Length: 272
Image (cartoon, rainbow, N blue to C red):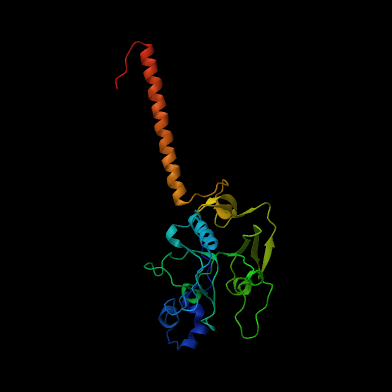
């Protein structure tokens, strides 16, 4: 089931009147700001993370396959603005990576998103992941408080406003992985047994995989299945298929050679 903040457009009724709502009320997409009004890219903000952040987010996306959800009902994004407060419609948070379940992958089933506007979509992310850096670590871990009249921190938005069920932080320098689960109204850290954890709601686990990705050998965040197998990327799947076909052809060759040897032992020359 999707994690819906607003079961129906009419649950937004008190706020809709701020935007000259009519009677009967019109849908949010007709009167409220949409992603076209609130894009992620600004002229003064390139929005470009470093290579590691790009590659890590890419690996997370390419291995995220919850078995209960068709691919077109999963939105995965990195460095995409989430607009979360209709009273302050220009306030946003930009997670390093997040996933929303039960929404169309494409905006209105026809185009990629410029941002994720929560009062238009009505569904909160199921999980968000932050890749810690020295400049953002305190905010990401809820160790700072915003100044008066300033937007709340990421921690506050994820915990109190969007109420995202799972919040993951990973320090790529120390390779420390931490998981926070929303329990009632606040995040509680989950004590990990090792370097991975299982999310039963989506039948997937997330852990640290030691391997080579984008020609960089290090520890990476990666999804795994119920058998604790790391979920392959599309490139790895293709390589696996090629290798399986090679092994099948080799078995056929060996079988043919054994059969030919048996025929020769019986005095019969096998046909080419």
